[in-house]
Amino acid sequence: QVQLVESGGGLVQAGGSLRLSCAASGGIFRLDAMGWYRQAPGKQRELVARITSGGSANYADSVKGRFTISRDNAKNTVYLQMNSLKPEDTAVYSCNAEVLLGVNLYEYWGQGTQVTVSS
Image (cartoon, rainbow, N blue to C red; front, side):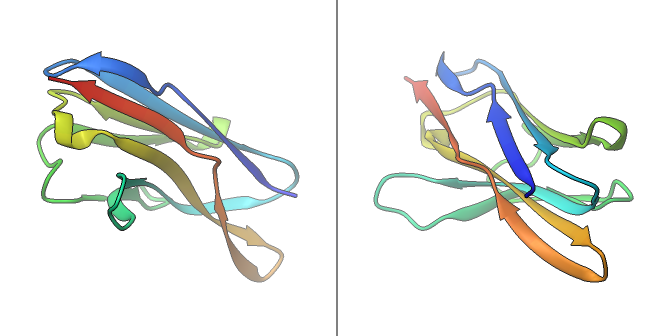
């Protein structure tokens, strides 16, 4: 059973930075694309950033230039560096991974980590 464990959330003032990590574990598998999503109270979950196994990344317009997604394939870990944080970035951030098990591709989610940006 593949598990995604996130860390790095917390409370930060506007303009500050946080770095989220998401580590995959639990068996023999190959990670394909990984991403970060967020959901603020009363809003739908939205894609923040996504990175392919080859390292190509795409971002939501609202975070371009402020957030950077990266991955360490040797550690099965994806990171989200968040700079110049704004109060509107406050949300629960969840890690997502596409995992190849045998010939099948499965999608897994982390439990989520709270990010709160105070003004």
